[in-house]
Length: 136
Image: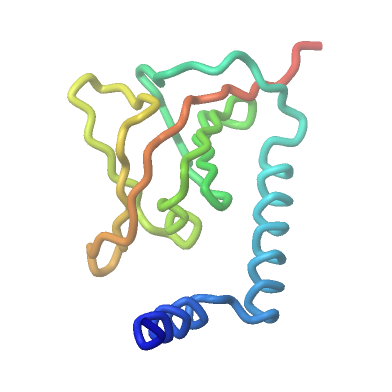
């Protein structure tokens, strides 16, 4: 029995992060949150919607597991995923397949490297929260 447990303990120890790795991950998450706050600064969230119909996204950015679809300076949509599409932040392409022409919560998106076309991740889209410039 002891011989069965030892490999498991060794395998689990190999997965543990070092203090330096933990500090780097904490710093990365803080930078992502700062970037997200800056991206949505001056905008007010509205009621979430399950689908984006006829979306005219000019830009897509990722902040950790959060995707921001921009239709311009005054309207952005936030979709919180469970993670897996963070490659968009480094320039990967987000690929979605939609027979209805809509992006909907629960749709599976995948990321692809723009140069090699090798898949780099996938995620399930969350609901879409519109952020708009407040009316004066």
